[in-house]
Image (cartoon, rainbow, N blue to C red; front, side, top):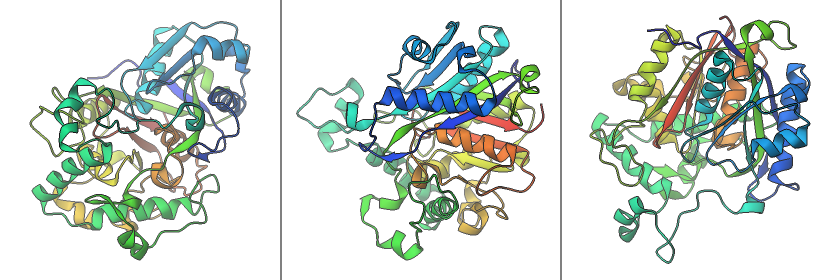
Length: 391
């Protein structure tokens, strides 16, 4: 089965602001997004006024019509928001933009995400018993389950128990991300290396998650520009072609009130299958992976569900050596990822995948031809993306 976007659309421009600790941005969220979009347009070598499509996710507050007016865009011919919260939509927003281009709805689509939590408050903060609770939380909050860390810890413990796993694979993911961040001057954790001793001695957040198993909280903005394969060939940068995109959810999957059968999972089984079908390639073709880290347990289950390793192999596969560029079996989150570069709800992972295809990463995988992005494990819906150096 071959889907309609395969090789027809490319990421041609990437842009990002400086990344800040949560609440530390000196400017508004809107200005951060404008800066990222303008940088992406400059990177592509196009006039920002030619952008006519906008795609975002996770309830982004930066309205396309307002952005278009501020940037001087000639018109808005496509505007789209991926359903759901968290980072499940960072690959989906790109996929939606690619579909719009193939359908002829727009010529240049920007997928973007911005956060300024000092302006709007902490994103996704757990709600206590004193306030309004969404319906699903009514089943869990009375028992003390409020935060994503608690809910995902339960799923991770189930997964670890099923396959007899130790803490080592989780530590391997965290240590690899921090090792990559030491090569990336953009990373918040640049110059702050992590050792296994530091990892083990850090405080528990929700077992099996130590502090360093948990993503950061940051301010900033990131953007990618998409256009057709034909236009891409005449632009400034080496194109990163969209080979496949998939989104969705298992029936009954919910972070806080699950009813699906496979409790120890990341919600990617159907999405991963459709992703590889749409691209006409398999997990054995992936050279480098950018897998969303809300918590290392979600990353671990995502890798298994995308076929990067079998569950029974995790103990020996998820080591620092195997997950670190340039020589690892599957270099993972080569910019530092959500754990150590920045938590821009995963869109920074799409930028890093494009850099790997261009050959421009600070932790470059030699000869990387296929890059995987897996967005937002253990939420619903989720999405995934495959980029390639050739259409």
